Image: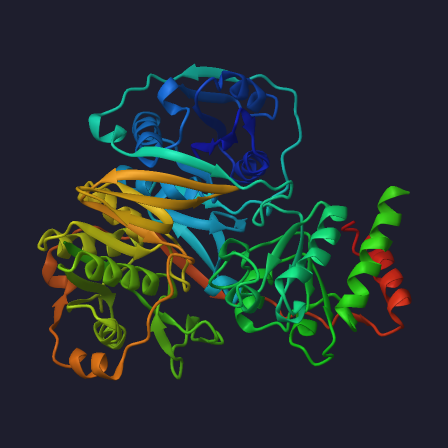
Length: 318
Length: 253
């Protein structure tokens, strides 16, 4: 095995957790683990990666890279791959990663395995049909681009090393600068992203109305959790599309998924079935959700959720 | 305006996955237009209607059966359709993208639309790869689209928010849920669809020489779960037991 690259995901000068998760995966794959950091004023992040045992880090630091665009990132990464010839390139399967990964793969003539959740002796494991089945995919040529689902691999621990830093010359072609980012609207929320959250509290048709999601938000606040919704709740207009968990929504894999008033349509189970621990709260004992739940309470969610919030509050304060 | 929509036929979201001889068995499965592609078809139709002129062409790479999905898009209002039959070809996302790009190179287009991913393999690669082959700028995961003079502006979903991106035309856009509500074909639309052009091309005749860069070694089904613990006590007791179990047994809190 030659070089295995971890393309760091950073936001506002901080490395995201998935970057360290990819370091773990890179070590499992074997070979020389190297990092790539792209952005503006990101040299500090490169040395930080070194502390996690990454031997060498390529840094593309350029004022034009402050704002992400597909074309700019593709230019930088594709040229670097062509020059340095890594065997495997790991990129986060985030909104950003999955935007430039296939473009880069195509430019360098590489195959891509998207949204992987496992690795076994040379093959990557990934869900298809939103987790109703899995495939093991291997490369027939290199380089291979792999996008890695956040929250699946354990984050690497600090190993206390120092990386050799190599600065990469950055230059753009006129077509790279055609896309203009006019505005970035941030969602004002203290809660984690659904796809990154360690705990998710999700509501379905049983919530009966948008106002009742307050109950879930209170519970989520105590747990530091994200709030999701089933397709039924989204279709009813109670929550925005971006919060939908399921086959036509987000696929999530938190440590704990609390499904409240969700019957468990196959569509929904496909999106959250890979959660490590599933808790169901539903008044219908026959609900499908209980078939996949590790723990369940049959009863009225309007009574149970506030009690649950209080119980967690007590536990987490003590 | 010339609008092209890339469309894939997929399993219905309710479909149960069954393996037969190590492959996914599609017998008896209801097939639909990939839901994200349906948003793309709807958006193309809306753009054409808004501008009062233009053409919407739907293009699919797949088997003969994909004609059903193309007919449905025609019934929704698309003007004509092209099916590229990929039977007998060794496929991965790159090969499919090369095949589609080859067909698109023979067509006129101002805007190409596609779903951001297909709900079956969920690779989220083909649309973007096509954009790269054709040298087009892209806007991925669009939830709102505005067509201007020689340019488009897309609101795209990013982690923790939305980004508004403007690119010159021609361009490729991938659709995300929230973009619109796809229409149902009307009876009149279904009747008209029968008369519309549906051209069938064999991919092998296109002279694409890309070969797959990845291969599926194995397909397997996830292990069935064991029945969980259901607490049936009165609410306060059940809640206390649940929280205790999450902390001491499952160790997730």
